[in-house]
Structures are given as C-alpha cells and as structure tokens.
Amino acid sequence: MEQVIKKDHIDLQKARRVLDRDHYGLTKVKDRIIESLAVKKLNPDVQGQILCLVGPPGVGKTSIAHSVAEAMGRKYVRVSLGGVHDESDIRGHRRTYIGAMPGRIINAIQKAGTNNPVLLLDEVDKLGNDYRGDPSSALLEVLDSAQNSTFEDHYVDMPFDLSKVFFITTANDASNIPEPLYDRMDVITLGSYTHEEKFQIATKYLVPKQLKNSGISNKNLRIAPSAIRAVIGGYTREAGVRGLERQISTICRKSAVKIVEDPELVVRVTPKNLENFLGPCKFRDESLNKKDTVGLVNGLAWTSVGGVMLPIEVAVMSGTGKIELTGSLGDVMKESARTAISCIRTRADKLGIPSDFYSKYDIHIHAPEGAVPKDGPSAGAAMATAITSALTKIPIHHDVAMTGEITLLGRILPIGGLREKTMAAYRAGIKTVLIPKDNVSDLEEVDKVVKDSVEFLPMEHIDQVLKNALIKNPFQAVQQ
Image 1 (cartoon, helix red, strand yellow):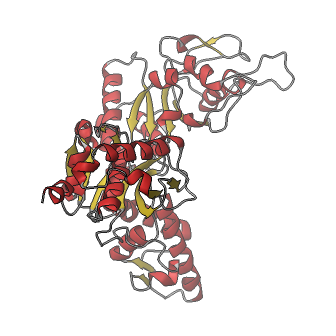
Image 2 (cartoon, one colour):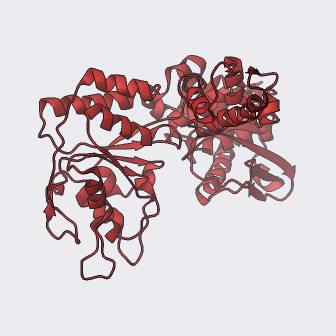
Image 3 (cartoon, one colour):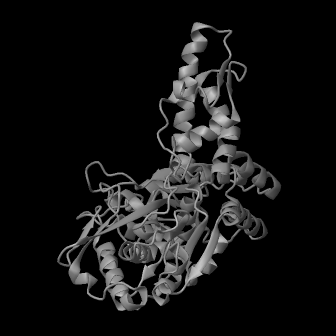
C-alpha cells in the first residue's frame, strides 16, 4: 500500500485564528493543541500525539478535530466507534473470509489519501465486545506510539506506519474507557458551558448558521439578545448547545412561514412573544425553593451530560425504626444513607436528638425525579444534613448546596466531578457550596464566573457542614 505524505504547513497564528473562529471559549483545549503544533513545528518527527477530548454532548469535541486538521493543513477523517463490538472492525478480516475487507483505520487512511491525516476516533467510550473479540484491545496497538509504526491489518497483511497520524479521540464518560487504553492518551476535559458562554455561542455562531440554513436574511428576522437569554434559561437545560440550536432552528422555521406569506415582513423575537414561537416555558427558574425548609437539602450530582441539582427530602414519622429509601437510588447511595443515619446516631446527644430515635421513628429518604436512576457516594453529607434537620426541626438554608462522601465517624471525603457540580449550583442561583476540604485544589478547574458568583466553603467534618447548612447551630441549641 503506497504511503503518501501531505506536508504540514504549521502556522501558529493561523491555527489560533482558525480555532478562535470556529469555537468560543475552550481555552485549555486550544492551548493544548497550539502546544502540540509548536512541538510538531520544532520537531516534525515527534510521535505519540494522541489527544482524548472528554466532555458532555454538544460542547464541541467533534468539531475541534476538524479545526485542528484545517490549522495543520492536513486531511481530516472521522471514524465512529459507537457500538463497534467486533475486533475485525479495527484490524480487518483475513482475505480467506467471504466478504473480507480492511478495518476502519486502514479504510480511513485510504479515504484520506495520505498517511498523516488528522484521524478522529469518535465515541471511544461506547466500544462493546462479544465473542468476536474486543475492539478496545485492538485499539491498544493503534494508539501506542511505540507500536503503531508497524500496525498490521489482517486484510492488507503487511506492516503499515500509523505513527505519523494525528489521533484525536472523543468520549462522554472517561470511566467507560478501558484503563490500558486511557493510559495511552492525553486526556483533556471539556466542561459545561456557562449561560454567558451559551449566549456568545448563540449570537456569534448558532443564529447566523440557522438563518443561513433557513434562507432568511437578518433584515427579515431580528432576535433580541434578551430573547436568546430567555431561550437559554427557560427552554434548555443542558451542558452543551445542541438543544439551544434546535430551539433557534424552531424560531427560524416559524418565522420562515410568516416571511413566505409576506416577504416584506420583519419578524421581531422578544421575551414577550417568545411563547408564540416555542410554546410555554419548559423550565422554571431553578432557584425555585426560596424558602428555608425542614428536611430539604440541595445536593449536587454529576452525570455524563453535565452537573445537576439533586434535592434530597427526609421525613421523620412515629414508627418502629424502619428506613425507607425511594427515588431510584443505586446500592452505593443506599449505603450512604445508612452510613449517614449511623453517623447522626453517634452524635445524637450533642444534637439534642433522642438517642433512641432510630427505634421510635420511621425515616423516609427520597430523591425527587424518581424515574431517573441515581447512584454514588457523594450525597452522603447532604443526606446526613437532611436527616439532622428533620429530627431537630431546624430548617436548612435554601441557597446552600453541598457535596461530599460521609464516613461513620463524620469525616467528609473528596468526590469527583466538582467542576460540573459547581456549574449546576451556579445555574440554580446557589450562593454557597460546601465542598470536601480535599477538593479545594480542584477549584482551579472551576470557571471564573462561577467562582465570582458562588462562595466555596471547605469542610472536613459533618459538624462543620451542619453549622453552615442549618439556619441555627444545632449544637448551640442543645447547650442553651
């Protein structure tokens, strides 16, 4: 197989212009790509440049690769790995089989026409495996700079040099990538967009794109900036901007009908008439719980599509000591709830709670949105706070949210996904977030706009959490 090399034309100024033109924000990703290009310019023979972009859907992972190819002057090819569960999809079939063909990697190289394209391996966390082999194991050789210079496709049946290919992979959830494969890649995390970033993306990219797609000139359709902000706040709740783009597309389609009927018409979209285009508002303001409530705490959860608020409710009733856990909770979360109850029992005297509450009362812990499965240990501190509030009848601050794993001794342990969780708190209008002390170093990853709007308090022990979350210090109430 003939190996054609396309010469790199690396110009860092041009590369930065291309990346800034196509993507708003994403500073860390752009800097990392510029660094790779600078090294490539100084040492054209450098190998092992394999980037893995991890982040929620709709934040620009796939389109970054296209911009990198343009910035480097290389061909761009994309290989989708979602649902691939046959090893021969990567390595190809031996030619003795009927219908044999090369694997996806060699096919992509052939399509590019050069042996040094920018090759995007999309959705690397969605690989499966079955009796036909494990494709993620076949990728180990492809993504290892020490081995891929002699990659052998079963169909081609001779070594092919993949070391000049610039590999970029994408994933929604890094925990689903097999460890040996994860180890071979330089992982860059892309977080959720803030409201301001979404507004800038909508104004600079999405609105012009949808106007062009709909064949509408910007003289015929005027979308007020306040209307775009209303769409972001009231009609979308996502980490990326795909849902936002769909809503803008809907506005353009509805406007197109009016413009076809009256070509001279100028359609103006404002927050007041937005419902005529998109229907009733889908999401009310997340800071809906404006009242300090007994037994209701704001937890924070991480999902593969970004961070979300996780309210937890606790009700205490006279009974025989039963514990009810509802809301589609996973095993780890159920264990956290039991740990939280035991932790509160150990300090019942200090809190002024009857020491036999566990046998006199039934405790019901519920996480609303019961159809959505929830799991993980990071709601332990929140559950302990809600249980204490329900037993002492002291309300919890409505503008405080928290995250952290709890132990039997009341220690607060670190958690993952802090950046996404803090973004959810910011979106919900939360003023104070209680975080584990060991997560303080992770605040460097948190967006500046979030740090400016939200106060972060590091916690080492559940006693500190209770003093900051409840409107009255439960320990002082006992002393008095």
